[in-house]
Every structure is written in structure tokens, then in C-alpha cells.
Amino acid sequence: MTDSIALIVAAGRGKRMAGRVDDPAKQYMRLGTMTVLAQSIAAFQSHPRITAVRVVIHADDRDLYDKAIFDLVSGEKDLLEPVIGGATRQDSVRLGLESIKDSGFDTVLIHDGARPLVDSATIGRVLDALETTHAHGAIPAMAINDSLKQANNGVITGKHVDREGLYRAQTPQGFAFDKILAAHQTAASTSSTFTDDAGVAAAAGIEVSIVAGTDDNFKITTAEDLARAEHLLAGMGETRHGSGFDVHAFDPDKPGPVRLCGIDVPFDKSLSGHSDADVALHALTDALLGAVGGGDIGAHFPPSDPRWKDADSSIFLKRASEIVTIRGGTIINADITIICEAPKIAPWGAKMSEKIAEIIGLDPKRISIKATTTERLGTVGEGQGIAAQAIATIAIPKPKP
Image (tube, rainbow, N blue to C red; front, side):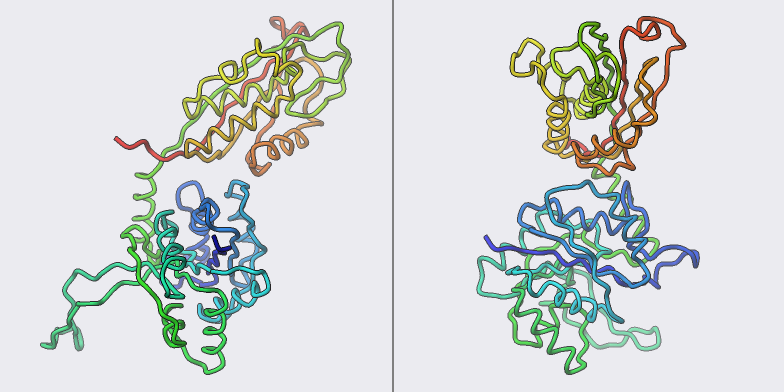
């Protein structure tokens, strides 16, 4: 299998998108739980045959880009630093290619950042064509089925337009890396302009094959396009919530510190439990499992199993996040409330968020740690233990009927 990189072009200004003058470029507008650009990046990051992703951005958009990638769940795929594009899309692609020319990639898939609904199957078909045919280029495309007309000053002329052999080109457009880089450099040296990368390739004598595209893989150009994408995305997925609760008593014979949210908080006692008794991680583990109908922590890690004696509860939380991923979900947010009279939680909140973020691959800004008391009511209020409750929010594809 060859090493493939996705080069996502997002340096345009989207002038055809109607809206307020202070609206961001279309690729930075919200679409579902992410921006348009983040949806495009996520499609390639989640594909098992894509090794890395690089985005080409406008020189003025670094802050917008940084905010957009906060929407992405940290994963295994390398998201390279963005590169600044040029005056035209063609210039931006060439600059993007030149920025990775020494990275050793065999193939590159060039994709419009404003095509957020590209699916895994389309990406796979392009890669298959590059690997199994003699062509050094492959693009998804849709045959034109509508009648075509020529017009002059808004009036149809009598000339017949044959639609046979005509296609609507889409992206990602895939190529042997060295060949498309050379083709773009040649086009730049001769000041030749083309509407897409397949045109650049064809002018250089590169054979480009066609694979099946999809109607949903359209480019967002107008406000109507964005509304259509929102409608389609709403039909593809749903938001779910899961809740979890746990409580552990203090062990008077076991000195501190006390383990909460994966870190050791200074205290004179620790909690009693089969594992490390981290009530916060236990509650969040149950919340994640609940969001995907995955049972509870006891079903996966029974306290009767000696393997989990004194175990680090980060193991439990990590497994729960993996189950969310296996079932097609994406963790959006985690909200944890720790209930105790002591120790004080606020000084440790930031470190707790960072630790959980490390375990489940989520940005710390999407994790909330709060603390409260029971006003000295009940066993927790009497200082006999600590309780925690958690709510997890995930996005997941809708089940097929």
C-alpha cells in the first residue's frame, strides 16, 4: 500500500456566498457540530488509507483555521501545519504540493475544503484507481443527465449540445505525487490556467481516469448549498447524551492522596475501591458507554475480576472512548461534577481537564470540571466519601432502518 496524503485547499474567500460583510469565508461557517472545513478534514483523517492531511489556507485566516481544528477529535492521522496559499486556487495547490515535496508521499488527493460531505467510499475509489490502473490520475465525477442548452442574451439558440461523454468533475482528485507536482510547476512557468487539477494533469500528458462520484459531494458555493448540506448532515447523524454516577467511601486506613480525574490530589485519605476508586473517571466511563448503549462499567470491568484490582481507571475510560469510536461515534463534550466537602477541586480543575483530554483524545476546552457540596447533607456531606456525576455528548450516524 502506498503512502497517501490529502491536500485540502481552503484559501478561497467565497465571494459568491451571500451574507453579512463580517461573515467568515464559507469554509469556516458552521455545519452541524463542526465548521465546513473541519468536516472536510475529518473525512480524510478518519480514512484508514490516508497517512496525513495538510490544509492550504489564506494568509489572513490562521486564527479562523486554529478555531476550526478545535472541532476535530485528536486522532492517529497527522494533521500537518497549514501552508499559506496563493492568489488563485491553482497557485494554492502548487504551493501546497511544494510544501510536502520532500515528505516521501507516493500519492496525493487534492480536495476542495468546501466539499464537506465527501464519503469514505469515494476516497477509496480514487485510491483504488491509482493503485490498480495504469493511469497516474483519478477523479470522481458524475455523468450529466440533464439536457444541455446554449443561449445568447438569455435566449436559447438552435444549436444542439450533445451530453454524451460529459461529466461533472468533483474532488478529491488523486495523482501520483511527483507527476502532478511537475505538471503544476510547468503550468505556473507557462502562465497556463485551468479550472481544476485534472486539467493541469491532462495538459501535461497525465492520463486521468474517472470513478463514480456522489450527488452529496457537492461544493458549497451559495447559502442555499449550505442549507442543503445542513439538511443532508442532519439526516446522516444524531446527537446523543449519556449520564453516569459513582460514589466511593474514604478508607480511613489508607492515606492519601486521592485519585480524581486521573490525577493525585493531595489529601489525608484516599478512596476505597477495587480499582483506584477514581469516581470521576468511573462516572464519565458510564456516561460514554450509556451514550452508545454500551452497558456499564461493571459489565466491562467487573469488580470480581482480579485483573482490575488497583487498576488505573484511565484504562476504563480509554476503553469506553474506543467503544464510542467503534460504534461510529465522535465525542463532542464531557461535563463532570465532583461532589464532596473536601478536598478543594478548583485548584486542580485545569489539570484534570488536560488529563481526561489526553485519555480520550478531546480538546481540553470541550471538558468541564465542576465541584459542589451537599451542604453537609448525607454521607458525602458528612465527609465520608466523594461522589461524581458526568454527562457525555456524542455525535453518531443514525441507525439504518
